[in-house]
Length: 220
Ligand code: C5P
Image 1 (cartoon, helix red, strand yellow):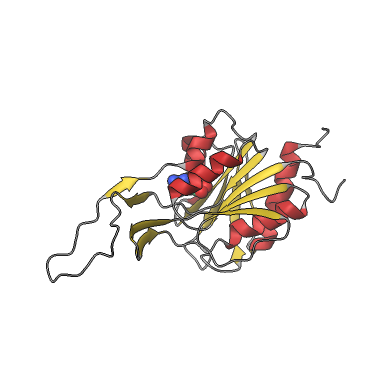
Image 2: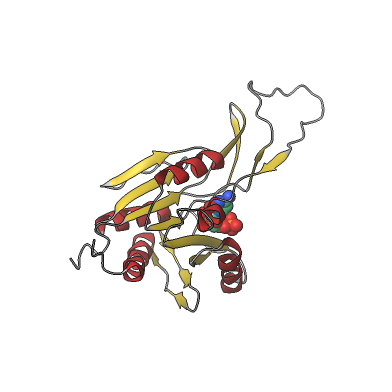
């Protein structure tokens, strides 16, 4: 039916930051409230989809009808994403930490009045790029790009580099981070659609509408 255009579809969403532990009390993270990802999960569920939301550490309520898997690190997020396949569409909104601490100290590191310890980093898996080449690749794979300059050019390059179908680019040079509004460009293979600034819930509904259009009517 027209009001539940994603009925019968399984949509996977990642949201929030990841925390990469250094010791039991310290971590590396990106800035992310999780609001945009949770709004997309809510909109997809409202559109009738089965929704799996893999969430990093955030203080947000689970939207109604959404199946939520809480994770902490990028590697845990990657595992949870793999475990959720197959899906029809995946929207990777999480601000995944690019690096983790190579070592984890089992006990809290102490200040000993000597030189500060050096933090050695290791690269995290790129969840979006791995999904793009996965055996069970989602039919529609969407990434996000937070940019502060050359937003569209960077988003186009990212779409190619990551093997995503669409990139939703947002200009985060303003007050988007943690705020209620977002202004995005939806970059596809042959089109760039710019949406005016609007609440994150409205961005979510617009994106879900386009996802439903792209997946087409479900005749199973
Ligand atoms: O490369 P960058 O982090 O800017 O790419 C952003 C996009 O890639 C987002 O969709 C984000 O969720 C995804 N990503 C990921 N795994 C990473 C890094 C980014 O899925 N390790």
